[in-house]
Image (tube, rainbow, N blue to C red):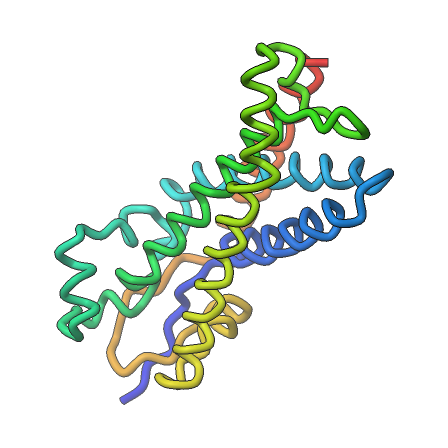
Length: 221
């Protein structure tokens, strides 16, 4: 008997699609250049705020959004890839998918950090670039515009390919679940809490993260 399970709470879904929008904005503005770099920097600050929110939400958020629910050992990943995974591992991020999620979050954090230190000597300079030595700025700029950028794009491409694979081969629409929050499962599973009180908590938490980032940037200027 199929079970409809609320897996992704509204704050996690909003975080996900906001991050997608910001990454697209970052890529487009980096290609346009010129005055668009002002927006590139704003998108970067938005990603920083979102990552800070997700870091905290990973401990206090909905059941399947918590880091503890998609932190797997290498042995779990190998067993899953061999088709020996447990049913509970297919509810939220599965062991293979969790690697992609962790990698994307890590690469985004590195990209934001390097952007804060970068200076293209034309139209944009990160707020930390004037507080460190020139060699560090040069290294950060080089990483941000080459290895960091293309490594992130490669990881995002693999992530999208995996989503397409699950849709075509396994008939599992992962993107739809991140829109509606629900998954249709063959077994019962823990429902994530997604009440208005939880959403209000997330709104206050995001506002706090925004204030912290804005205050920090103001202090640096």
